[in-house]
View 1 (cartoon, rainbow over the protein chains, first blue to last red):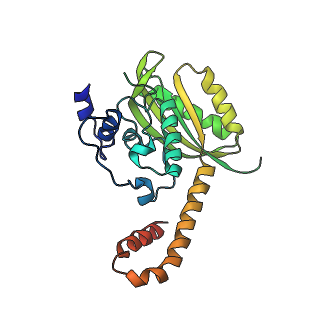
View 2 (view 1 turned 120 degrees about the vertical axis):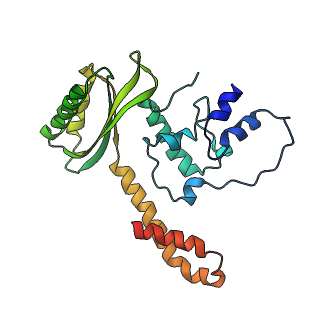
View 3 (view 1 turned 180 degrees about the vertical axis):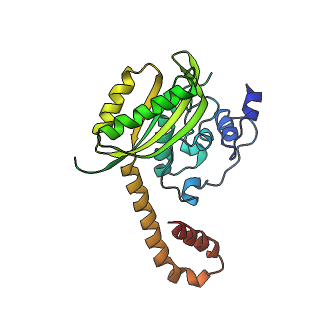
Length: 99
Length: 142
């Protein structure tokens, strides 16, 4: 399972942090600087449900939507992202549930 | 109901269908829409893709994307036809004109903010120079 984890391309390394967050007591708990919303920096106004690559980076392994407390996405963009992911699921571009 | 709406339609055709049949189905779909007074803006064959999960025991599907303008009547007709067509594994229609308007509004608001900023930004011009560049790049693209 963990090897599968490594293989997934994750440009931001969100998945890794996600995993760590779920397992307290593993290594020192570092204070992390507040992450800035990537979509705000790139000035994204609409998140397309057909952009599978982008959406995949926000749906780790299990296929769940990455919470914004992990990714640092702002509320506005998280809403757009969630909607796009749900649409992509509807037309089988993304899984509802993996394994 | 006179207003023009924009839609994006994605539908997935059975992977066993031959290229000719895919074309035939796509043309049939376009005809349904134009017959009802709709307007085809774009047709994109996204090709055969692996499905994220099985639909009707199929692991692949041929994706077709249509961009349509119209009143909404052609969408109702299109969906009615798609429901009974067993060569179509799945279809989805998304109304996009409202999202586009919203995106435009956000863009305009950003442009207005960028106009106001330079006076405040001059005091520490060295630092925000990068940010301003990006801003003007966006405006140029718009």
